[in-house]
Picture 1 (tube, rainbow, N blue to C red):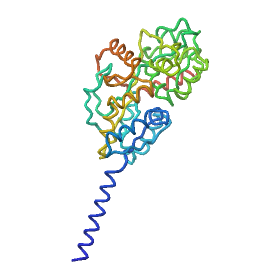
Picture 2: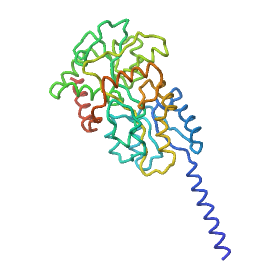
Picture 3: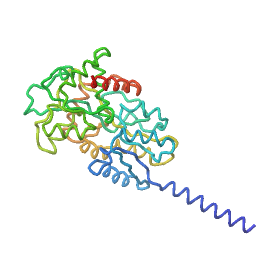
Picture 4: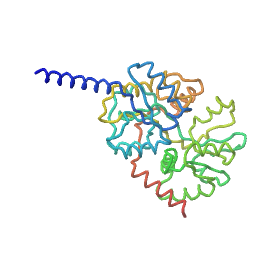
Length: 336
């Protein structure tokens, strides 16, 4: 009898220790470099979150890009160590949904302040920006006024990102196909190719080439000029104002299904707090997804964005199969 009591007591201790270890395990967050790198907002967000939620600890695994991160999640499947994923955008939603790895959060969507009506409870936007082509006002006096004009203007040297490696590039393919019908898109790609300087692996590479003077315009976000204004004290850069506008990119946080980490929803919710937004937005140079004041330049641009594009419809996202087909057409067009 004594032996049974000892064994039962030991099992109870082991069970309690296991539960306690699970409760105190760090929240495993997969994220891409623009959030989790040393120069990104992730470190400050982690410190602020852990002060606000002392029972929680955060551990980042940083990937060199969001496409790389999504591919890792596909490979790991249900064995993934991630509890939360930060950095997937709306052009990846269909592919991400098909993994079956994500579940709905408890985040109150009414807290969001966006140019679209957000109904997706799985992917919670913590920042957004509108796609735009950036130019140097001192060098380009007659910027294009539409995407179609940019495609036709052979005097413009253009740089954009590869849709096979960059989510930005993927977004550009979606924008082109939103402007051009199927029977015209291949010819449009071919005309653009004639004055495209390079198609870079990612945003950092392409924007750096633009700043070196290798192109007249570069594909980016309409927020990019704010960076130069605040960091470089220069107002020479501007986003071309297109009559056909640009698509929106929403960067999101999502929770892995089947995980029971108590801090997961708290962390995602914290990203929408005024405290976190004031860290994230200036560092990532995007627009806030909530109505909290951030900084006058960002606040003004967001107000202008919402005024020009009041919430009128739910975000529409093309299927992964459709985008892959569009990318194949892009590849074929460039090889001819």
